[in-house]
Image (tube, rainbow, N blue to C red; front, side, top):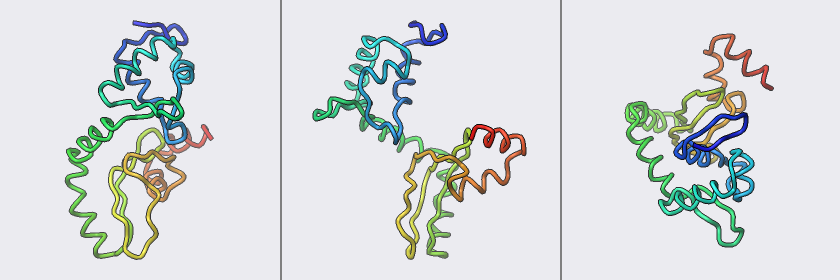
Length: 165
């Protein structure tokens, strides 16, 4: 195991997962130095992890920028996750029927840690294409779906989220 900020130690597997989680829509491409700084681990360790993950398709290197981004293997796994989730399987026929009936956009999401994670969507006939992407995370207060979730959360949960800004 390798040390991390604050003396906490992580296994190689934990560091690999932390590396994958370091990417976001705002930081879709990162270099070795940035990853090292974000994770609090040595550049040589980051390079070894990136090389291993690249070999399995979980990380890809942009040849023009020499920065790394998530690879196609992530997409393949995410499709397995969403298609086998009981919520997805149960909701899909319902949202299709609701979409046909209302001609409106339908979103399915879950509330986690103050955010909405979108699992599926159907765009309405008379509406603009939705900006929400399957798998994207959005602060709950920034979306109508999230506001519905917030309306049914305990007061303490809402107060904690708003205290964070």
